[in-house]
Length: 509
Image (cartoon, rainbow, N blue to C red; front, side):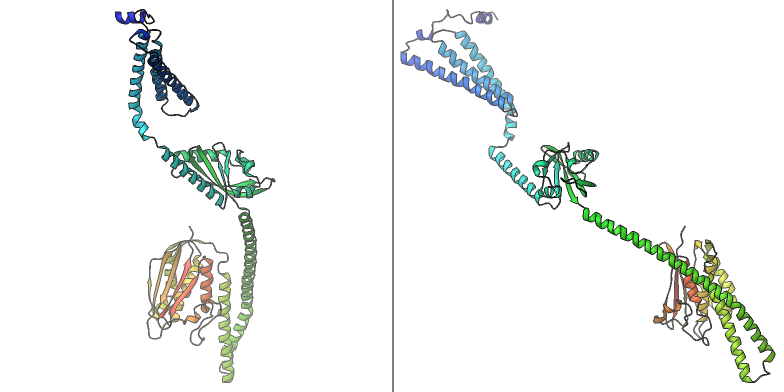
């Protein structure tokens, strides 16, 4: 420590050594060559750090800043050693020269250690060729993106997080009437009133999931340069870029779509109004027809009963007392009166279907048992075998009408049986598409295909009264009852094999 203290105490003392000119036999040429060479090296070493420091001051994003400063200090220290070598030719400042060399050695090894530390990172840096290739690739990608943007059929607007327009395509210019210069760096609200809560939502979506960012579709009002407003459909989606989060807006003019929707909506309203008018008119006419049928059949009963009564008295009092032709004529009148009475009664029953009744819970099993009880004598006389499946409970049905429906179908199955064959009838039901489908199947004479629709028309008969009696109104009853319950009726049949009548009941809870 004493030597160190003495060293620094005599740091600028030049009395211990002579100047270098006096050490040895220096010639003028040799001495000045040495001095000038050291000064040239020192000046170069002094200039290089200045250039490095100047570069660092301009290149704010330069990497490995510390290594630049270490290089600058190291080179400056090396230059200082050459400077003091030249100075010692006149002033023997050997202690200062030794101190400068020590500092240079310390800076040199500090630089070496730091180089070793940053060398692995430096090896990962891309070469100039790689950087140029990347720049070229980015230019191509940017050009491709711009071409795609320009060729898009919709207006495309790119905005930043603050809603400032960054990029637009030609369709945007055509749609809104602004030039690109007028739109760039302006608020997107000049084109359409986008809510910023939507932008915030999309920004959060884009930050949470860059691989599949959220997309929001909005119907807004676009505003052209001339102030004209028009409906637009906007698809907003976030774009994560090196410049930060961007938002792309694909804008489509939907004026024609809205006009078409309005036209269709008005047409539907007009159609619905016409349907309601037609429905009301049909309901009114149906009520008038039902009222007419009811009044006509009711009013016809009184004169018919009078006529039938006098004819029966005439038959009772004068039968056998007149000639055979007169007796035959009286029998014709009696039979015609009976048929007319039955026809008027059936017509009156038809007009009364659904009038004044309320729907309620109905057990179809009970209804069918009541029908079979009413037809007990006919069933026994004709040795009819009837099989009934499990029938449903209907929550909104008309019991009287349902009973009439089953009674007509079962009676027809018995009536139109094959001679010499015992009738077999199967009654069943199953639930299909929210409604109950009933079936009444028999092994009777069957129906030819061309008559399958005709049999449900009122007063339509396929057989003469001498073969099968009836008024021709029974299946029309069945059709009206099925429709009263929101269903329909149809038949599948094969002549000589039998028929299956199906009808549906819409059972709403």
